[in-house]
Image (cartoon, rainbow, N blue to C red; front, side, top):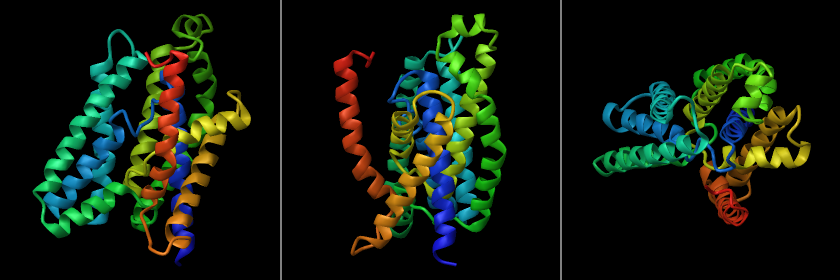
Length: 276
């Protein structure tokens, strides 16, 4: 009654975050291409905070609003980034701009909220496992059951897309359709994950690279990213609630781990000349 629902939620959220992060990174060809930074999570945050502050909504409405926000912000980024196709750097740059816009609106809404509403909104924004109800968790589990087989089927077209659009077309891949399908799956996964646990930062960023170091870039990388994401999320939740004198949101622990990794990644990318 106490730990099992939280463990199931942490595992499901971690799997969704890990897979969506890896899909973004491989599709856009950039290790910084994470849903945390390209506007998807911030769009979910804006709609969820609006539901908390403006509508005094229930947890179900908050989760639904987060999912809607993720889908709408991702659709806006995709439309703005489209120029006879999707370029990785254009998608990332536009996503960062949309993310900052969404976060500014979040700050404006929280600043004009009451103390109680602002506290509830900030708790949700940090992200923690187990804050959603059983209905939202069941929805995420159903989404994973449907989408995971689809992701595994699309792993082969994903490897073709990584070779470049011209090579992928020569191999018979339907480039834009496959890219759109993979991005759509990643967006839906991150949307459901954020709807259940809030925007838990850095899990989507670090799970994919860790999985690739363990199993390589061949077959099985997507499943490995999901497993690594689940381990990170469960480990962070265990530390936040069991190993510290005061209970903390899960996102605090993932932030403490992920922020140094992000700094190291930025330095490494810059030295290798892959930062654009």
